[in-house]
Length: 446
Image (cartoon, rainbow, N blue to C red; front, side):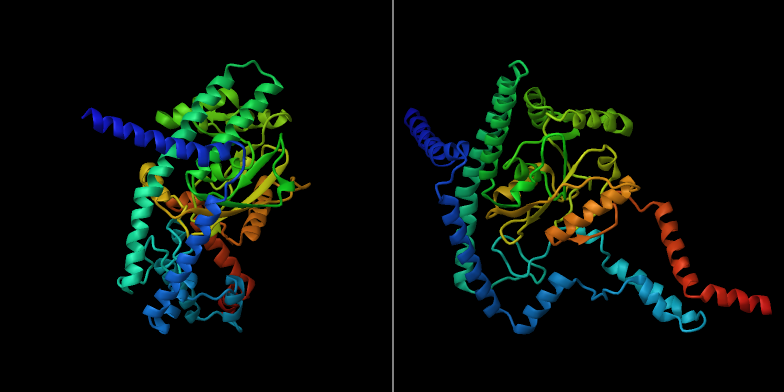
């Protein structure tokens, strides 16, 4: 028994030595030994080979159908706006057959609406040796099956233990480091040490995800006293951004491990955590955020205005609260590559532990980040208009679909007031084309 314990201790010692030497220490100094680059090249070649094998194993018609279903969905919709479509329906007078247009739109929404699909994982054109696509590939070839089995062994027997080890080192370092720095008196040295701890631990945690991140336009990185807003796909969005800079976080105070991290980090960095009761008081939240922004020496606030995770195919409505604070807005667009791993957190389907397990058994997290030029509220522009302008810029830069729907529809029903507003819009469209006017004139003549 003692020999077994001794052998296990030696294996653990060697394992930690290798991990710290080859991954943790380079992360501390912000350098790479090239291991991740070699891994990504091998992974890309493997997935390219797998794609070719799959294409050989299915008929051309099936491949075409897969492409259409993955990118176009079940229903092929026209890009023409509803106003133009309705205008084309009316020649002179209103016709009863015009009702069929709205019936068609209603059936399309029931079969495949543009909102619900944003709360499920993005479909892939080809199997990435992780999950199955909607065509449900089964057996293609013996070689492909062998590669898939080897992939499972590598992901669960090598990558998962490695990533769990790195995550544990990163989290413990974050808690211990920020707690120690938090004991120091307020000074420029404390701020520098705090940023160093946050940046170093974020780099270690990104390595725990095999993160490969490309940052564009670094000259536009958020500055102190500003507000950084970004589209929201996953809790790891925070790590993606803090890997390249430090931010003050805004959010609800939690318990458990997350609460421990929050309480330790706030000692070293001016994060803004609210109790559940305070989160309901919008004026109190706005006041505290304004106080933070007014101090130009404090780190930029990081906010995700959508308020929920979207599957990275679109950008949904931005809550106006972030844009009522004042100050300079620094938009950031984040786009993940789902071919290497699905970063989207479907919180209604997976709890945080299940989600992290899926992430840590993926091939890698690959994404691009675009820092965009700062934006300020224009004269005569209200908070909603400003939020929509920033949202449009982020969607355009990230190649995402821009939607006006509220991400809160993931869990809530559509409000009656919104339904009434849509009914009014339909009525205005019909009136604009003269239909209602013609009917009323006919009634008066009778």
